[in-house]
Structure formats: C-alpha cells, structure tokens
Amino acid sequence: MLVLFESSVGYAIFKVLNEKKLQEVDSLWKEFETPEKANKIVKLKHFEKFQDTAEALAAFTALMEGKINKQLKKVLNKIVKEAHEPLAVADAKLGGVIKEKLNLSCIHSPVVNELMRGIRSQMDGLIPGVEPREMTSMCLGLAHSLSRYRLKFSADKVDTMIVQAISLLDDLDKELNNYIMRCGERYGWHFPELGKIISDNLTYCKCLQKVGDRKNYASAQLSELLPEEVEAEVKAAAEISMGTEVSEEDICNILHLCTQVIAISEYRTQLYEYLQNRMMAIAPNVTVMVGELVGARLIAHAGSLLNLAKHAASTVQILGAEKALFRALKSRRDTPKYGLIYHASLVGQTSPKHKGKISRMLAAKTVLAIRYDAFGEDSSSAMGVENRAKLEARLRTLEDRGIRKISGTGKALAKAEKYEHKSEVKTYDPSGDSTLPTYSKKRKIEQVDKEDEVIEKKAKKAKVKIKVEEVVEDVEDTEEEVVQVVEEQETSVKKKKKKDKKKHVKEEPLSEEEPCTSTAVASPEKKKKKKKKKVNED
Picture 1: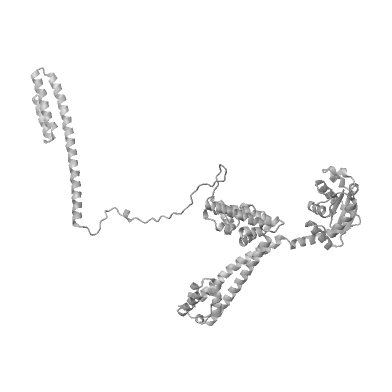
Picture 2: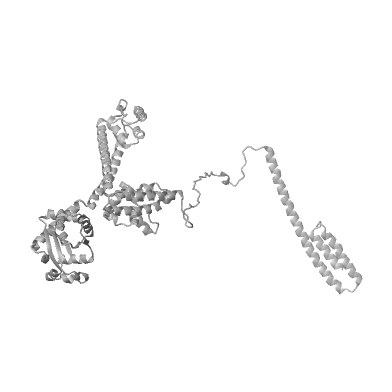
C-alpha cells in the first residue's frame, strides 16, 4: 500500500513495509516513537519538492477545494499507476477526485489518519535532503500566504461591508430627516402653503431648488416635477400666499441645503442598490426569507454571518428586543414575541392574532437559511424560495381557518364559520339620568285632571284597607275576652247546685255572643263594662 503525504515542502509518497502493524490502531503510535522504528514501518518512495511559497500556496488551495494540481497529477501518473497498489489519502474528498479522474483505488480510514499522524511526527527523519530550518520557514510562509488568501475571499470579511452599509443607511435616513425638516421650516416662513400641497420631500426640494423665490412660481415650468393639477394649485397658492418676505441671502442658504438633501437622497438610493446586490451574493436565502434590510440588520446585530448562524431560532426571533426581554424577566411578565424579524413582510401581512405564531415559524426557517448560506457550498436561493412558499401556505391556512381534523383520515377540513366582525353602535339612553317623572312642558288640562282623579282613588282605597284591618283586629280582641268570661262562668256554675240558675247562666252568654259576632258598632270598652255587671249579678 502507498501513502500520499502532503507537506509544506512538497508531495511525498511512502511505501508501507509492514501492513500487519496497521491493524493495531491503538498501539500504532508506539511504532513512530523514534525515526528508526518509523523507517521499519514506512519507506520514502518519491518526493516532489516545491520551488517556492507561491507554488506551495497554489497546491494547497487546490487541495482545499478538492482539486488535483498539475504537479500532483504528474506524480500520481508516474509513480502510483506503475505500482498498481492502493493509495492511502488523508482527505476523502480528494480520494474521490483521484479515483474519478485517474482511476486509482484510494483508501481513507481511521488507520490512515493514525499513520499520517505518525509520519508527520517523524517527518525530519523520513524525508532526507530537507533541513529543519528550511522546513520551518516554508511552513511559516505557507501559513501566512494561506491565511492571506482565505482572508481575501472569506465570507466573514465580505459581510463586514453589509454591516457597514446598513449602519450607513440608517445614519443617512436620520440626517435626511433632519435636513428636510430644517429646509421645510426655513422656507415655510416664505411660502407655507407649498409644504401642504407637495407631500414628497425630494420633490419639494427639487421644486424649491428650481424656482427659489415665491414670486418666480408664476413663470416657472414645473411639468417635469409635478402633475398639471398640482402645478396649477402651487401657482395659485403662490399668488395669495400669506408668507413673509425673505432676503436673497436666506434664499441662497435654503437652496444650498436643498442641494445637499438631493445629493444625499441620490447616494442613499445607490447605497440601497449596493446592499441589495451584496445580500443576494452573500446570503441569498436569507434575503428571500426576510428581505435585504431585515437580513442585513440581523447580520449587523450578530456581528457577522457566521456568528448569526450559531444562534438558535428562539434567539433570532427576539434578536433586537433584548431590553424588553430582560425587563419582562425582571418584572415576571410575558416575554416579547419578536424583535427585528417583526419588520419582515411575512409578519407584516399577518393579522395581529397570528403574528407571534408566524414570527416563530419564520425564525425557524430563517435560521436554516442562515446556516445554509454561511456553511453551504451552493449559492442558489432555491431553499429560501421553497421555505417561503411553505410559510405562505401555512399563513393562508391560518387566515382561512382551514384546520385539519386530528381524527379520521385527516383530509377533511374542520367546519368553522368564517369570522365576520359585526359592529354594534350603542347610543346613550338619557332616561336613566333622573328619577323624577318626565312630562312634556305643554300638557292638556284634561290629562292633568284625570291624573289627579287616579291619584285620589288610589289614596281612598289605601284608607279603606287600613280601616278594615283595624276593625278585624278589634273583633279578634273581643272574641278572646268572651272566651275568658265563658270559662269563668262555667267554674261558678259548678259551685251552684240549682238547675234553674244553671239554665239562666247558659242562656245569657248565648244572648251576649250574638251582638259580638255582628259588626262592632259599640266600642270594646262599653262591652267590657256590661259583661262585668252581668257576671256580678250571677
């Protein structure tokens, strides 16, 4: 078996002398403790030395990309094909390329890795003709050149331009707002009506720069900047404007400020186009998922695309809302559902009820797109387009309430009525404000008389009821007194032995009961006196 060993000095091909020792992987390192032991295991068959650092850099960059260098191809055709033995390589990708292009059998296994490690430890003794000082200088030069090459084409360094571009874009927006506000305030003293007619800030500044003084609007041609209707309105407002007169020096300063606003606006559009192109080149899938502005802000917030790829989906979801998160954790309230991702178009077109759900799903798919862009070799945006289509389909099902049934086949749609907002307008009822009876100011005399008669009848009925209750109470009192008197008479009759007197006593109470059962005409006090007299006579 032959071994292909790449070093900073050149390519080396070794012949394995004792393949039985390779079966013991754990103890293979003992065979490379000294150069003498290493020479018993492997022997140098061919060594192709690099002429300078540039040639070494070209060879190693080709190896890193999984390609075969011309020099390596010549060595393999010359040495390995003649030997008709399998070739052990350290990189499986490189072995696949060699097998495909040169039709050589290649081996890559843990045993080969241990063998490469042993050869590297005893490289000075296994490769004769190379001084240690020369090998060290070649290693150092190759490391610097390779680092410089990787730094030049590193995605981590290219996305630094994205971070700077989005920061500069935000700064330009702030400065533009300040400049336009100052320009409108200063020119508003001279022509205040213009700001209400022209709402676009850039058009406002261009009109101001072209015309200048308010008196020039009558003869100015603004058809290139404004529609005909708006132009006529501006000219009419200029004739009857209530603004004050301004000196020519002030007009010159305002015009200079307008020139700055127009120049900054043009540079901003140019910078935005540059940012779009860079985002599509560096992170195409992220751009498709959340847009170039939100994607650039996420990269800027994390520091780089690689740092952003290390974040979890839950972190990306609330990235930009750290203050709200820690405030919620401190006060034990609900944590925020979204941060910078809230400005994505998918979250913006969602109803407030489903914004949290969509932002969570969007963050999960965005993290996959970020990692694909950061670590993947393919630069297409097919993955982002596919995931965005899935999210849009999910959003439509949520909005249409097309929820699938859990039981059964799962193909039938759940029957749910479509939500329709019914706005009920309730008016204020003033009738409950006062407890007094409400009458109209003008009432007929007959209505007043009828109401008075009804009130009098109700009062009479109430008085009659009270009198009847009093009469009933008096009758009950008299009946109780009669019962007491009868009991006393019975006790007195028992003591008397005469039968005639007994009959006389029995007839008298009956005669006395008759007036009691009738309506109480006499007062109860007089009846009591009569009863006492009769009892004494008996």
